[in-house]
Image 1 (tube, rainbow, N blue to C red):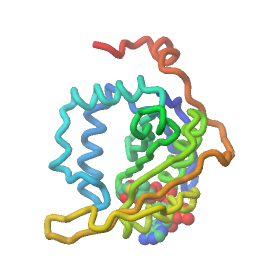
Image 2: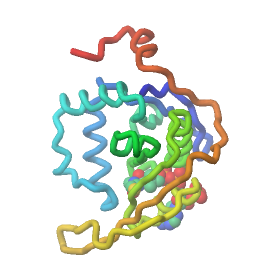
Image 3: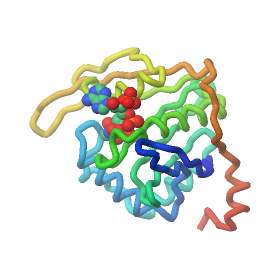
Length: 209
Ligand SMILES: CC(C)(COP(=O)(O)OP(=O)(O)OC[C@H]1O[C@@H](n2cnc3c(N)ncnc32)[C@H](O)[C@@H]1OP(=O)(O)O)[C@@H](O)C(=O)NCCC(=O)NCCS
């Protein structure tokens, strides 16, 4: 699904653009994934485990644009990609089609400026427009910053997997699952999605190579 550019205001009145990440930005995205995963132990993969090729990533981004129930957005500050956020359907069967998952990660240099909050607002809005009824996420139980953000947007903890993550030094960490009920309307603000086909036509680009 395509997410049209939305300009949001963060701390110090700075402007950030939230928009779909384009397939041609695949290399940039891979560099971000490697950078972000090296900055925190709260993400699943280590930088060495980001092994996708640029071509793999480009195809992944194309698929995200194609998929009706998924969106991959980037946060751009002064045209620089500083954050990634996405929603995707859980499972893909009729019995769980009402559920989506969300994930957000940002360059450490830009934490605590309000970018994560703006991204979460946008993703909740998209999820509701798509018709999802439940948004889910997994977060390490000691990731206080992220949990604060999720609780601010109405996520509630519903369970814990003990020792879900194991660091290279043997240290283990629990992981919480959190859920947000989307059937209670989140006040929509000016943001929009539009169909992929419409976007392809507008951009004059070809997605299948
Ligand atoms: C978690 C993350 C997405 C948050 O994004 P962000 O842009 O920094 O978030 P925001 O600035 O919008 O909000 C951060 C909030 O956490 C609060 N916070 C910061 N550190 C905190 C801490 N140690 N404990 C509790 N709250 C904390 C801030 O005060 C702010 O609260 P407020 O909105 O009530 O003022 C970002 O820090 C990140 O990418 N972290 C590394 C990757 C990660 O952990 N991703 C989540 C995996 S589940």
